[in-house]
Length: 101
Image (cartoon, rainbow, N blue to C red; front, top):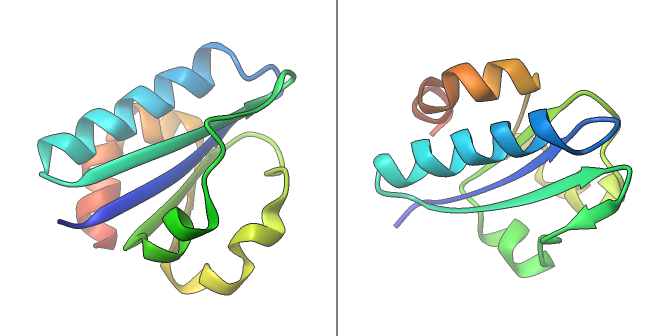
């Protein structure tokens, strides 16, 4: 099974962050893939991705409106990292996944 991890982040880390996270999770599951999403915002990091989860991912999605906290965790995986806006993730997660797998 293909694995996707994602980081969704906006300044407050509320509505758009969770809308994007839900959209990515739903699209991944619809496509038969394993999905884990970390969210970031004013309250910090929730559901922090473990190094093993990042390393084993076939695709890493950053759906963000702000800089990702602790970005150094992802530096060696630049080749499988896709950056999109929160709006793109909310509206087009399935296409983002299929185009980048």
